[in-house]
Length: 436
Image (cartoon, rainbow, N blue to C red; front, side, top):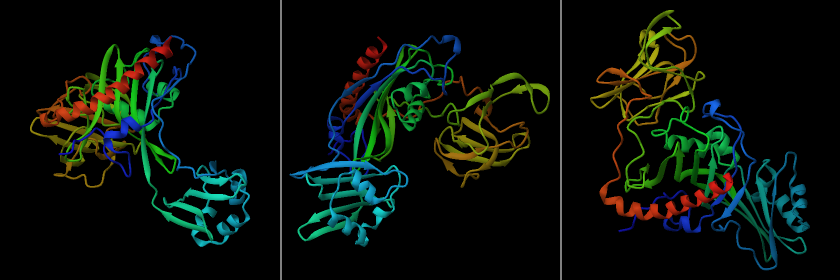
């Protein structure tokens, strides 16, 4: 029986059991000092020390095609207003026969729809004669032009893709995003990092100067060109001296989730916030001056500020109990999560497609969009967490956890995690070196 590994296949990727060994992980660490979202209290800040950059290469990926004898590869990014002739000239191609073929052959027509930012890659000999040209066309197919015995040939085909792993580590000085930007961590990965640890860390209030993180994540490439960041496969976050670790695992049914080293799931049965990266404008309180009613009354929910149209996510798996207008709540969705728990999402501008009584939803599904309906003085989401139909503070209540990793999978999981644990440990040395 083949063993399940920690990475899922995505397109044409490296074999799972070889990903870590053959992937390239470039570790960049600097000290962040820019204020952004997820900042901590200003009185905890001190001037950041001069930034230092440390680069460590774990392994070298094979990205470019093998060079034929007598040739070399060059790449040129397309600039606004470029013509094919201008690009070829910058690439050092001095080949009249090749230029005539590219100008007249219908299969090479995508080269006359050059998009700024894309790359044209060529292999040429010492005399500037074209051997191979490759270009990832707008339609997503890879155009390849090759020199053959009687001239040239051109063909388009779906491109192959590769996945490499990158490791980056950063120290918090003002905010998570500032630290991430300083080390070149893609925003999509930063958002994943916050989501993975959101059940243990309140990124709005809990961050402190000196906290730090290490992340191992996928980077996809097509024909040697970056195709964007993928998912996090391993991460570590140290917050106020507490160490949190997460490892991606794909089960036999194809599902993917994050677990601690001992196999306990990091996924809570409920998310703390139904919105991504927002701020609380009114917390849970037994006495609050209501801005709409202009009177003092209990506020047994949490208000999150967000622009109209911001997606609202289901806090947990459940069933739609109701979706419609509810007096002061305006457009509201009520989700039932088993017999004990329910959640309420109010003041919505509209409901997501398919959200109606009886519909099943999964944690993270979009159920509606922020609005200003009902008793609301501005666009925001009013969120309630109920236990046996009694409102509780969703920011402080101990949330139940989801199911742990099945016992039958623990052996394979620990074997896979041991490799990534070693990768994460490398981030410790870089973080300490950068702080000296």
